[in-house]
Image (cartoon, rainbow, N blue to C red):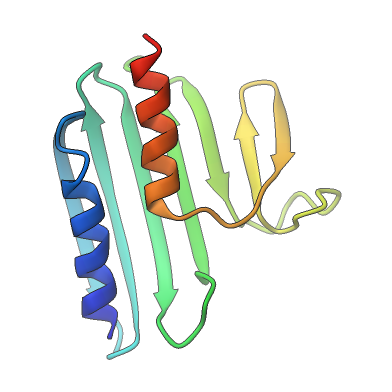
Length: 124
């Protein structure tokens, strides 16, 4: 089950080969239904997405996630995560960091993040 989830993540990434220069993926299998996938994706403008998902396939939501997107100088463009440190956010614990503020958000999927990055890259 977790293996199929990891394969899905890899298929999603392969669907963005037109904007991805390189990627490194690490997988940890805890049992048949639980695991961790993380990696770094470099895009054609040298911006980088660092991501992590801790997933139990028997649950809808991810146990933990972070999607940290930064420019070629390693300056954050955005970061989504579910760390429990912004109690005042309506969507707690889900939130989005921007350079100058924190926003409420639903739990994103990797494809949502890649589409957002694709929009950013196409506007350059």
